[in-house]
Image (cartoon, rainbow, N blue to C red; front, side):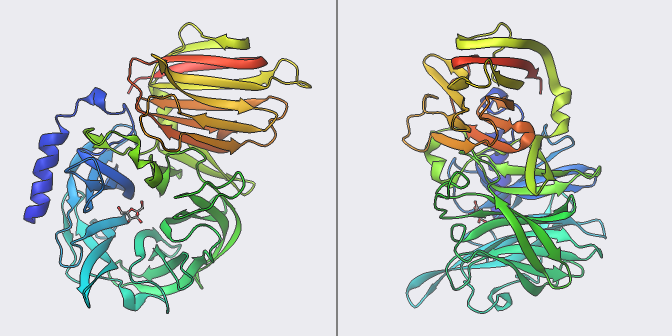
Length: 494
Ligand code: FRU
């Protein structure tokens, strides 16, 4: 093991173990110490789920990337393992960027990551990104002597050598391997490249899987590609998006393309596109398939443009989302909280057909780690209420809320009053078609520092983080006009 990796492992153990469990979320993964961004190498290996992550163990901000590592059997309780990769190689001194993992036939776990190298050429700093391998037993990994396995020679004509990153491997129907990688073609936007390999060590360029052509932001980061419900799905996280109607917000966004794929040619045909999450804090998701055939997605519960949200002195920065089960219905992506969560529900409190006018607080409905389901209808469907909102993490003048406005068919996430001292995006709106009559279903998952709202049985999801003091644990309902509500709430005991 290199001294750099050893140092990271010693540091994270010493500093990470000092962070009290109540200073972290109850069931969302945070870095052992320091900073985390993208999920990496999300896979199942030897009976456990492995999740690696972009990691700076030494401080709560981004720096030369390592790979942190955690394992779980239910995707909700995580155990930290020692850091897997450090930027200690000849060509990755500027960082081991995002990548993926697949179990090999010989029982080893193969990691593919982007090595970032800084070189001074003609007095100017140049960045080179190449794809590299490391192989291991699920705990320790050795960088492959044949690295890099893909470099600028494997790029289609005109593609950037600086923006070539985030390989996500998959198995094709004949058992061979493929991977999708983000790249920047000569039009300056993004494209996804498709490579194949028989055994994981020798890779060949096959095709340009999909091209941005400046439609969705610029560079496409962190692709994932898989087959589900008879369709092929390409997820990617575009940089530099511009607002596009109610679907896409400016900055770093996420897109899901649903379409068809020809394994022989490596060509993907887009049928439709949509954002993946309509809240504020979501980026760079990765998926895996469980042994019982469910496609599970986990994302970084933060976004580059909203990084100032956390106090730089905090002991950790960055969380992963709740693992979400994906489904394609009528060419739309649906997301559901992972089924395993339901087994940790306790203390059911239920109210049926309640009238909500002005402000309503309900006995037994409060808390910061809860699972709450509600169905809202209008007392008068012809003339529904003007707005309905649920406020949570409420106390001492602080709260975060979701606001439903039937006349606009929108739900808005608003954390303006959560106690943040930073002036950044605190409000985001999501269109929920078909709700003009005031009928809306939602499921809200709260952990200590986050809210994930699943609307209309998972048709849209909105994710926000906040750092309101934990004593603020009230929940209240508000309506302008009269709404009726069925609500059931559980505490999550994890
Ligand atoms: C996305 C990203 C990736 C890159 C990594 C670096 O959030 O920019 O493209 O591999 O973060 O940490």
